[in-house]
Length: 467
Ligand SMILES: [Cu+2]
Image (cartoon, rainbow, N blue to C red; front, side, top):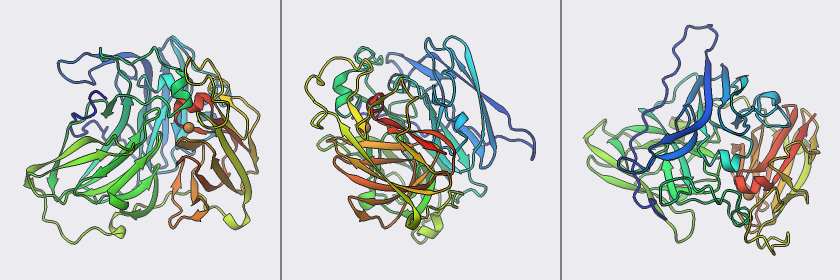
């Protein structure tokens, strides 16, 4: 795997400052233009990579608004194919959700536009990306982060963003396009790449000062790669999943697992000594651990450490998500099948191209990326709590994403979870079952799909109708 061991990264410095505007003034509109671009993700003296980008940069610009504010985006499509923008994790009206054929017409190639405008009800870390041919468009570089700020900023010294991505590059440093849609990827773990980037460049060293506290926002924008980051010498607190604050906790062995589409907000206290260096390891895939980045302490000390952080010191204020009434919920079962070794007739799925073919199914039905408009899998009574039991009857990991709502994860494999974290995407292990619960308070037709984009494109998608 080229480039994985070396990793090169500067501290993330391109967070847009919070828009300075007078109280009560109308929010400005942001222009996002999707178009081919060339970026130097591999660094000086290396080939420049041809990508598709928002505003010429990968990741796209960080959009930042205050909680409750309206975000207005004029999207322009200067690609040679139609696109849309989906606002991943935002609880916004269905007409703004960016799903072609369901919530909007595709934005036409070569100059089409679409105006998105919505209030952002929840503070947290969100992201945006196309919802049309995502397995190509997202892989080519179309993604960006949306940060919604809490009214009261948490007590940290720096707010740092790591957009984790995974590219399949050729020897010439170009995105490998010949194997987009390869059936092997679709029927296995998805398009796993050979080059990991953070914020669009090869990672290397992140500068830290002894004693400082970081809010570290992790976003997995890869098509298929799952990350499990382990911070040597540190004990980060997880304070939010998928933008939604949780009861703060320190994960076992300091390991933070993120499937595609998922985010985590951490509070990391720099407890090392000046001059020290620590590795951040990704060890998700057995036998394939590698160093993502080095935490490099500078010579100076920002402050002398006091008592260790506690949950109360790092807790974020809750978002206004309605609390599910689990005792009086309507219950549903959704079964995921397919893939290699999964019983959808694996013969012939090892080679060739997808071509709209079905590899996966949800309750026996395959819905592909090109046909978002589809009879609903479930119709959920609006205003009620629904518990959905997700049964992964495949041999593969699947990050299952629900649009327009955030859910609580109640149990895994029949065992109730001590923390019922909120999320919009949950990673199902092979053969795992999980129960999620949410109040269906947002009317419309909402996509419900695996965020391994090759799985989504070959059947692992369905519609939840809230009416
Ligand atoms: Cu999947």
